[in-house]
Image (cartoon, rainbow, N blue to C red; front, top):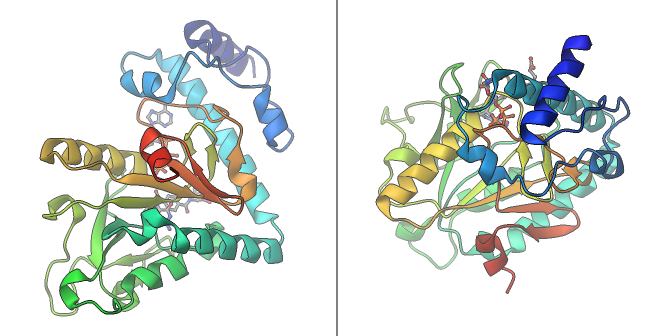
Length: 288
Ligand SMILES: Nc1nc2c(c(=O)[nH]1)N(C=O)[C@@H](CNc1ccc(C(=O)N[C@@H](CCC(=O)O)C(=O)O)cc1)CN2
Ligand SMILES: Nc1ncnc2c1ncn2[C@@H]1O[C@H](COP(=O)(O)OP(=O)(O)OP(=O)(O)O)[C@@H](O)[C@H]1O
């Protein structure tokens, strides 16, 4: 406890990110989270620009510790969510995505295959819609869908192209993912090797805040992938993909309530049952 308090003091002194007081043990409501907001002068991008080496390791440890407590609180809240409410929210979120101009205009995208036991926002209707045969179009204009496949325990994840739900098999974590080769024995296309860019990435997470910060499951898989894809897009002079997080209402926290570490990649927008919440200039463009 003493060590943790000391780390908070250091963290507070070094970055101004956290007030030197104990973290609340009550569930995170937006009200509680608000009293722990860091000063607005520190943005996600400022922290992201710092490398893991420029931050004091004790500061970094304290930030990861805060993330861990937030994760465990969110996991409990998600587990306790009323199943009827969950199913209503799943429907509302997917309706919003399916109707959204940024989704309808998307020709190529990455999305996750939701896992019910992880209490993730259901993406099954979104995935089915993208995989369905295009109406009034030839096969050339079929939309492309890439989904995650974990490569190893070093945060490496690939996004591989699938054309049917039958391309998926359950991994050791019971998450459906594509096999490396298709039924004809051909290597599946990896989004990092594709000729054309994806315009949309639908991301999962345990919590999100109104400034676009995202708290994942702690593996670093998405952050690592998003960083590499953004670098590829820059190198190829492609438009950056729109990063949209789908979220139950209880997963949305107040601005800057989520601690940020240098590898975190912020999202452009959130979709919750309350609607589309654009955050970045790219997302705001879709709301004009
Ligand atoms: N549907 C889906 N697919 C995905 C991800 C995801 O978040 N959702 N990933 C995104 O990275 C990658 C897999 N990463 C994962 C990381 C942790 C756990 C998991 O089961 N976590 C447990 C806690 C485990 C522990 O702490 O010991 C949990 O969150 O309850 C699952 C997938 C790639 N595929
Ligand atoms: N001091 C540290 N304590 C804990 N994890 C650390 C530390 N330094 C680096 N890491 C790494 O950071 C990664 C976790 O990062 P982070 O908490 O940002 O993940 P996440 O955003 O929740 O996960 P994802 O991107 O998969 O959704 C892990 O791969 C972990 O090994």
